[in-house]
Length: 187
Image (cartoon, rainbow, N blue to C red; front, side, top):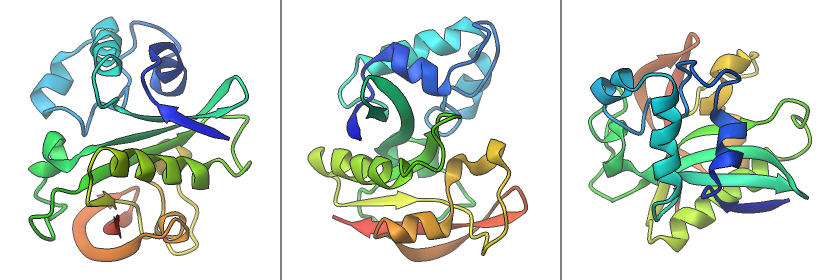
């Protein structure tokens, strides 16, 4: 498993883009940009916006590769550059300039092959390499209940605990009926 910065637009499109170019899928933008801008971008404009992000430094996240196949995606950025900076349901714990890790996705056909752990570790390393003092994630606290795959992008408490994160705070946010919590890993 190799983890690389998400600077290859075609591979990012494989992981988070739509099957039909004119579809209004997330492209992992819903927490990255203000809601008004997110809703204004339509169809192919969404992909072009992400293409621009892939050319920036730092890249908009990391990708996992199994040989030549892109198999995983993790969105990570400084919290101050995301909508989590202003999210009233997910509070700030302190003034530390943390990075937010809000989306972890594994391609169908590659799930349950041990990709999540190196993908999260790679995202943490990416943030560390860019000066992050800590990384926060906002997974669901689902106990042992099954999470709907459509909404599994946030991850689970157990997944982040295995990656060395600790619960830092509760939130008032809910996803798929499960409370979201703040998990943090100091770097």
